[in-house]
Image (cartoon, rainbow, N blue to C red; front, side, top):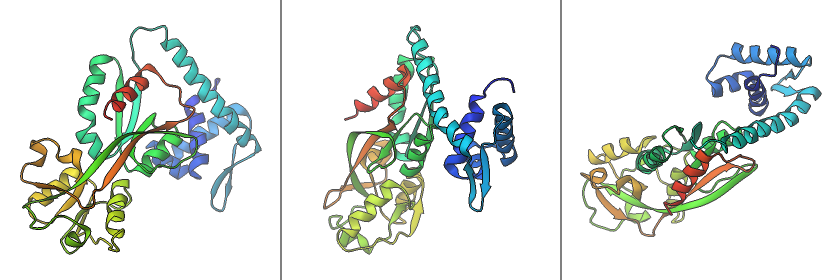
Length: 291
């Protein structure tokens, strides 16, 4: 290797952030030996040992810590260079990576991404689904450009912009005889979002505010799977209204507002030092129009 490989530099930073070669390999989707090879090549090029093993994984040497500091500057300089060159082009191209939850991906993003493609035909948009902590971590590690996630959000060096308040509703296969309150629903079979998601935490909190602890009969990661189970009469669920906003989406379902009302707030999250390309700026503008 005769020049500094930026991909190897990013891998080095990820190893430090995750604390081991295997954890970094899982994130990158490559083998642990491949990660080790990249680090060895980087150390050979820099003629310095960058990592040392500990009982709990790996940590940066003094040279590695210096490289981490300069690596942040190198990455920012590259982004600034690309943005400055982008200003000379009338065509918006490149790639934007967005992380969000499955419900927003299915029911909110498609028309927005269609508009974005009409505006910028050469722009590529990659979408990754996951829960809020996972998306935020990927943003912190610069593996995603921005996220659309459920509040609350916490993290280091993040810019958080709330954009949308959305109501939660109760869905069932047949109309309930009483209004959906924590007390009336608690004894019924709940088909819930999987544990660990921001949406699930809000729903659990709604019950807990009445001194109740929900005990779901099913925990699913897909909003469409939840609706299918509810349509089959296997229980009820509490979902964001966007999931049943369209007539086709609520077919075979009874949709009722909750008492007390439950809302979630969606926010755009990105790193504070993120250089905004035309593509990222365009996507942010479209998301903000959903207010």
